Length: 117
Image (cartoon, rainbow, N blue to C red):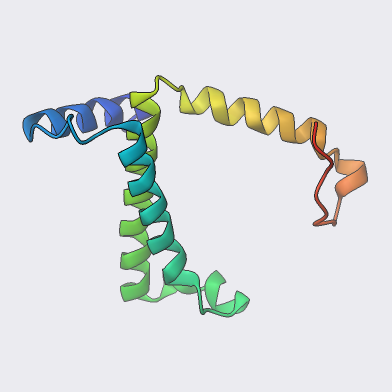
């Protein structure tokens, strides 16, 4: 199984082999991430909620989504690597913050937004 650190190293090597570090600024990678996230969203945009649950059952649509997930994940890893952000630490910290912000008893079954911390 490949770790996030392994993927970050492979992405660094991929960029270096192509002399692309000059283009891999945090701004450019963030913009690429936003673009790829938009492409992922476009695959789901006009589906009904029911269709969206079953999208991976369609081989063609599933393959497109699979590729877009890969693009989004790789750009996120590259951006975090450039800015020295530990993605697992950031995700765990955010999950803990959300657990405090959205306590289960108050927010069970509710989609309302919590007030800012």
